[in-house]
Image (cartoon, rainbow, N blue to C red; front, top):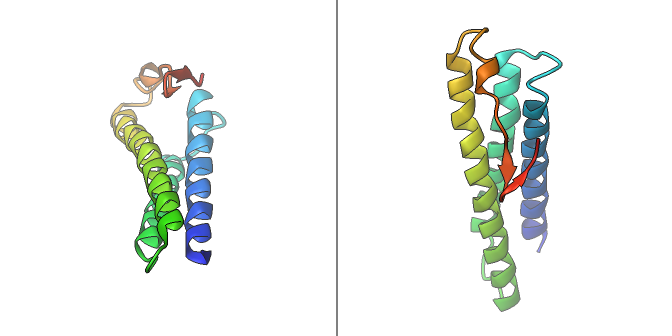
Length: 117
């Protein structure tokens, strides 16, 4: 149970890191941070999700209730990981632009169809 709870905490941290990145992106990266700092924001979300998945994989001999909880958490991690990957891919495009071209890369971001900006 402790390992599962730790995985949940890592998942929550990953979601919070993702949300922080999205909020910062919605502000069109204001106040200004360096490119590595921006990259670190989204990478830290991915890292926390990976840690959560690893911990789930380390749980030995779970009972039926634990298996159900693990499956739900695993699905939740996968869902957020897809969103994180989308942001990482967008960030690569953003970083490939010159300073003047970066403004044009901002557009609406949605979370399961709900606009976030």
